[in-house]
Image (cartoon, rainbow over all chains, first blue to last red):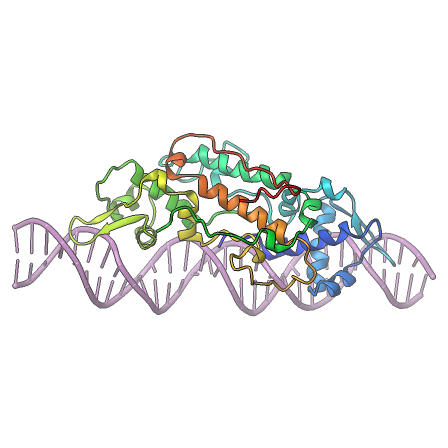
Amino acid sequence: MIRFSKMADYGVLLLGHFTQNGNALVNTAGLAEQYHMPRTVVANLLKEFCKAGLLESRRGLHGGYRLLRAPDDISLLDMLSVIDGPVQLTDCAAEDIIHQCDYSDVCHSRSPMRAVNQRIVDFLGQMTLSELMNDVAPATIAPLDTSTSTTS
Amino acid sequence: MIRFSKMADYGVLLLGHFTQNGNALVNTAGLAEQYHMPRTVVANLLKEFCKAGLLESRRGLHGGYRLLRAPDDISLLDMLSVIDGPVQLTDCAAEDIIHQCDYSDVCHSRSPMRAVNQRIVDFLGQMTLSELMNDVAPATIAPLDTSTSTTS
DNA sequence: CCCAAAGAGGACTAATCCAGTGCTCTTTCC
DNA sequence: GGAAAGAGCACTGGATTAGTCCTCTTTGGG
């Protein structure tokens, strides 16, 4: 199964919280409780977002975290990159073009694969945190006809 | 790092080989040698593709595998699904709408996330094996327009 | 008609990765 | 000065993944 990491899920959820919270400082323990996540996990994630410049922190008594950038200036790609690292679906999708994978002599798909990767990166980069919080009734998207092309 | 599995890489490479090989039967040992992959790994992959109806096999002496469907009738999604399973970036992207993740009570991103997932699934479903072997630029992924329901 | 070449199928193992833990240190406010 | 909060590690247990091994079946050729 191709999946974001669980940490990324948590991260999106947590950042989502901050969009609804104005400028108030929010602390780890409270988030952990409200979202029933292990406190240490929340602490680690927020720390990372902080390092990456998505959140700012205030230490000491009554400290906590808050958004450093506007919710529509934070992309899904930003969030994922912090936690799961770069989107690099194959080795040859690496940003440094010099990198050659072990199969470059027999592989004819390098540039199409890079393009596929780039399309997905672009897409994730366009998707903002505000849009992600814009939930609609699940029913509108629900009719997933399982159209996996023409499979068997 | 968000990545396809190594097995998926191998799989694409191997299926790619079949597009250049007309209807001739190709055997495991030859592929393993040509692509310097472990023979057993190649065997496992081809077996899976066969089960999934992308390849057909011929047993016995001078046996081997060949494509069962045309290269432009096999999507990247088809190949990935066989090896890495479904593209399901988050739990809530599962096809069965009933499924509720542990965080559904505090999550406001379910339907946008499902939409993101669907866009990517659609995109991978449009990308064919032939395109992967020819250096053709794939279509872009349309951004989610949250106001209009353009969803598939 | 028997043997070797090929795929089918499954169980197993080793290594890597990831989620989650535990500690100690620093900062800040009261 | 002490308690509440974040910072920064290093560690562990379990799951996942890559790769292996063995036995069975099918098929064609001598």
